[in-house]
Image 1 (cartoon, helix red, strand yellow):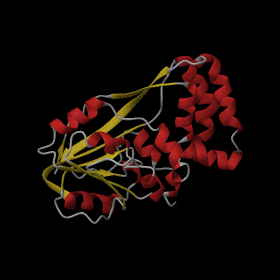
Image 2 (cartoon, rainbow, N blue to C red):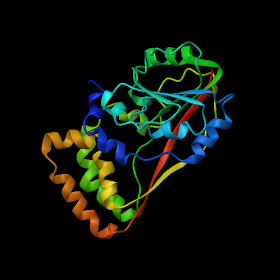
Image 3 (cartoon, rainbow, N blue to C red):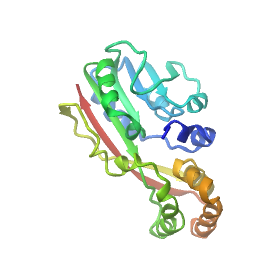
Image 4 (cartoon, one colour):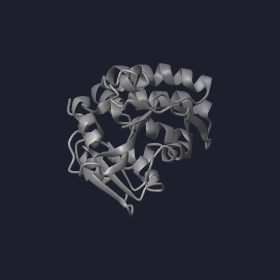
Length: 247
């Protein structure tokens, strides 16, 4: 499978609907970095993490294999976006104090990716990857979401997503000094329209629609709407998986 094509389609929807990560995550990251001169944001998508990393690092190099995602990234002073493979970049040796991966570690070729990370990371540099999976709203909404939506798209997820759902425990991790990571939840407050725009950004949703049409998506929306309420914003919570280490 050509992974970048999963995220090329509807990259504008992806840009508008993807959540920002909690402030606590970046605060913890900075405390565990020896310096904050430069960071590499790997698999940056359209820059959700890049925006916040710039608040803490002087220079952010943000890369993604998808040209369409990079085209939808914002223009930010001190952030350079480029289309590059995670496994092979044009960065100099020992260029970064930290290497970060937001919601993308499960896509890489680890045999090539880890040597590239070690090449560009400075001595005693910090690596941190994080991701999230299923949203939780209320028990009633969660139950209907499972039967009307999640169960329908489940066969259309790429196999790599299971690595994230399993907490990255099966991802090889080369750092001898593994950091103890905090327990942090990602929370959003969304209308039902905003929530379904987020669900539509999932690659499995779009692949499912291509195969069976979009009636399941509309039916799920209509079934949940009375529980969500008109003009109401609900809290949406997703637990973060975080792994980190130092070289």
